[in-house]
Length: 516
Image (cartoon, rainbow, N blue to C red; front, side, top):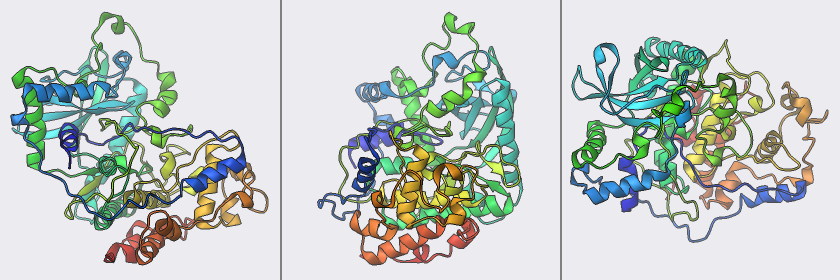
């Protein structure tokens, strides 16, 4: 692995990563051209993509970093996406400084910022009452609307924590510890403490340069996600609603955490200015910001746009931003020659219940990040646990190939939802009419016969998962059959026939040995 990767892996400490990626939006002039571009996205890769598993290299100790090295790290961080200084205002973010102590008896000392989102900032903190015990603390904006959302999340987190700690999958969900209230000149802020985690799966996808991960590593990761969902669905009756790479975090051990802290300490030791993503947004304490008030009425507009990966937001949709993240900039101009090797012992956990809901009490009609959105959610039929399972299928494909299973695009002639339904139709060779007509918005998209209104059959290419894996990604047929069977059982259009989290664990693909 190159020195660039080593540096990014050290500097990138996130409770959950949302990455800013480079992407261009195709504008189609008509439906025919639009469908041709859908076929083009499934074209074969270069023949130069030959198997060659690559492995991670040892991480350099921050204690050896020179002033020049630290300055280079800070310089690379200059383009980092940070929260707006304008949101440090009454009702907004809590001003936090490195070294500050917060919490009951001032037990938590701020080490550095881990990430931010529309609702909160997240900080790496040391529990000085215990000594060298570290947590991620999510500090929520002080406006009442944000407090209400946070209190709903706390109820869900408490259920997950207390429901059945000995059950399978319990240890595959990021552990919530407690919450407290902190005061600032901008109001009172709910602060939620979580176990400290490493980067997200999106970080691994980025490091693979969108080539995907080694097959056995993917299976191991998917098994753990299904175990976590089994616990959420069966024991807690909770729908996560936002399964995606950003919300699956990698467990890290003590040496990794020590390395994180040593990195920050080295900046202090040598008197080098911290990278801007480590600290508060510049300007929060300037006088002109003190008298401003955060506009709660603008919440919905900001949620859809702030810190959202362009690769994931090619058209308007309800994308829910994860606060536990630090962006990294990536070039997508070339693919590596091999899948990324992942440690067979890698441990991951599901994070971010900020958008989750109870089975019998939904908070929103439209859920899920666009590319992982289930059919029933698109047409606004009733949704349940099966929506999470659909997202797992999308995730399994993305981890295996580096590409989205579905990446709908809005155009002059098609809405984002219409294109999404077209992509689903192509992959599944149709949607049963009784499913097509089951949603509150079905009449917008489907004819009385159950066909798509805006996309004619001659403009669609039926290309099932198995054939996509073989034709585009050059998989061996025997391996493609197994993964395709797994994915198709998880994107079954009929929710009642779709695999559950527990039944998916028994699928042959998860328990097979890949051919070589």
